[in-house]
Image 1 (cartoon, helix red, strand yellow):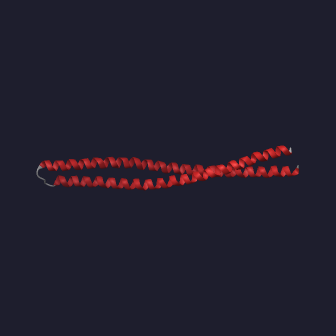
Image 2 (tube, rainbow, N blue to C red; image 1 turned 180 degrees about the vertical axis):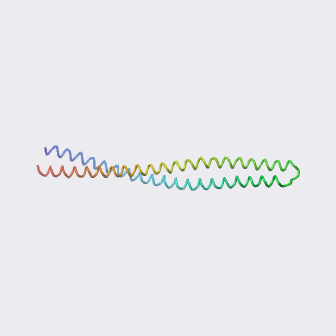
Length: 149
């Protein structure tokens, strides 16, 4: 019986070492999740700013186009050329705005995933604490039994 208890103690000791290794990896995961959260936050701020700037730029090109429509320029070809350039600028800004919208959506998805990663990490930590406590109790019981033999 004494040999069996010693064998079980070795198994429990290996389990404790494994839990220590897992703890180290979870610490790395925590740093990774924090980095992802920070990047996500910065990316959201930047994409929000880009969205606002591109929207404002499109409004300004619309105002400029309206102004040119009301101004008399000679010859007429110059006015058409300028309106064409404004339309091209507006089209480019619209593309930038659309890309910013897509980027903003991706940023929100990353932020949601970061929250899920944090919840998973907390669940794993709680579960590992419970397992560690159970192993420690089993070790204590085994040592107590070993002392009796």
